[in-house]
Every structure is written in structure tokens, then in C-alpha cells.
Amino acid sequence: MATDALPADAIVQAETNYLPPPPRRGQTAQDWSQVPGAELLYRWVETRFGWRVPVPTAFVPDDPGLYARIDDGRWVAECTCGAAWIVSVLDPRFGCAQCQRDWVPLIVPDDIAAAEAEALALVRRFWFHPDDPRNPAPPIPEEPEAPADPAPEEQP
Image (cartoon, rainbow, N blue to C red; front, side, top):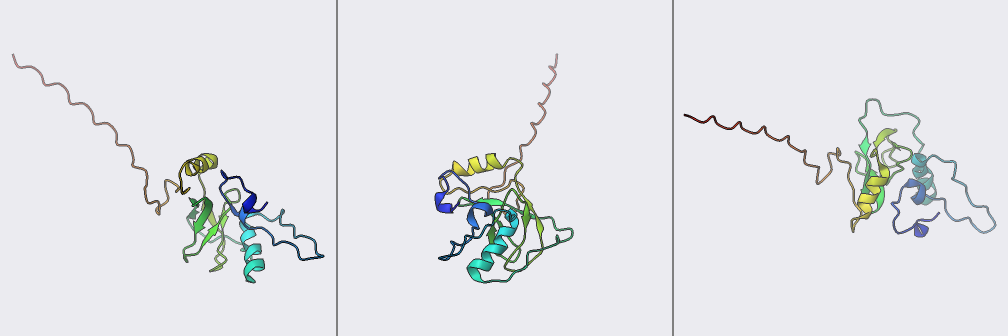
């Protein structure tokens, strides 16, 4: 499914962005349907850019992970090297084809559909995880109500 064929109310992720190239004349089309969503990036950069980047086989130990966000209608995560890639929220792993880092956990919202609906309601379609330190408008925590002052006792 090409991204041009996506409905206007769809948020792009790895499975709808990183697609095999069209087949050459006389050749059969490549089938990437069995490639996990997080690994599609590696197939795509190899076919589009000619980069020979190995797919990570291990996780970075003790890495807290990266937050996925919706950036102009696309699920993305930004690597510590500065590269940003479209990610799969269904396969929450992040690896970078630019700096070739191993997998790190991808932090996605608990309710993906609600996050997408919130972004779709906006003109530019942006959404940040509430806990993401890069969130330009973090939610303001509700302060507990101050206890009411007791009424002063009347003096006789």
C-alpha cells in the first residue's frame, strides 16, 4: 500500500512508508510483508540509498528508550545522533540506520488510536507523549485543592 493511497485521516508509520521499490520490467515484485515493522527501515535504506546496514540483533543495555511522536502526520522517533526515522508503533523497537546503534525500546502511548485522533484534530498533525522531555507543551499537573481555612471562631 503506497502512502499516496492512504486515507487522509491516516497517520503514516513504518509499515505504510517503507515499501519495496516497484519491480523492474520482467521481474517479480519484492515481498516485504513478513518483515517486522521496525526492520523495514533497514530494507528501505538498502534499496533506496544503497546502504549496507546490518539489522541490530541486540538491545542497548539499560537504555531508557526513545519516545515516539507524531510529527506532521508521521510516527517518528529521533535518535541521539540527530537522525529521525519513521517508526512502527506496532513493533516498538528503534534502531538507527545512520549511526547503526542497536535496538532501544520505543516508548509509545498506551492508547495509540487516541493519540492519532488527537493529532488528526490538528491542522499540522503533531502529538507528543506526555512524558517526553522534548514535548514543547508538557501537560500541567493538576495541583490538589488547598484545604479550606476553617471559619474563625466568633468572639463573644
